[in-house]
Length: 231
Image (cartoon, rainbow, N blue to C red):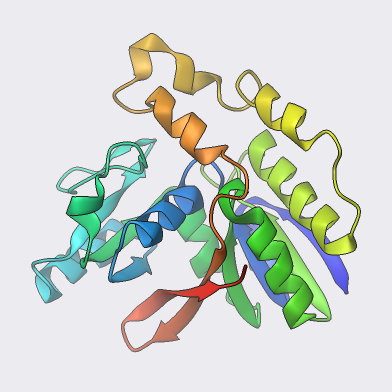
């Protein structure tokens, strides 16, 4: 198995084989929480126009996402796992758009298969890769807005790769803790809690919480995430 670690939107465009699109803070951690909280359907979209088109198609659809970190105007919720209660999600179709993660999914069109990755389901992602055993794996770190590298996404990619290769990172716990100062400091700014609440950091850095992966499928309406139970 050839495993490449790629970066940002350009990396997503280059992804081949089975692509793992990684966004730890916060897009694909959030999608795991939404699936766990009972969302009936998760649909990532690239643009605000696509999201609002879904609202026209399905008035009960929940619009979730951010631009510049903040909740998009007219949306029900931002990109915050701590701010979206299970009762708001359960049984609903969720339309999700972000500055990095969902952009990576749509840009990785060359890949034969696309799944998402985050620390909260990293072990499940690694188990899925081992079971599928593709010739090529592209671990795409989406970073900040898809244009600047982010330490948490690189760490997640390295962690997944280490699990696939059977070479666990012995310092993974300590490296996750250091993200508080190197990558996640904005979640601890008291003046920025409306956009980046501190609980989001802790939820997104809980390692190996969920025994499933989210796999992107394409239908006549666009991408739809499919939950695949692994562990």
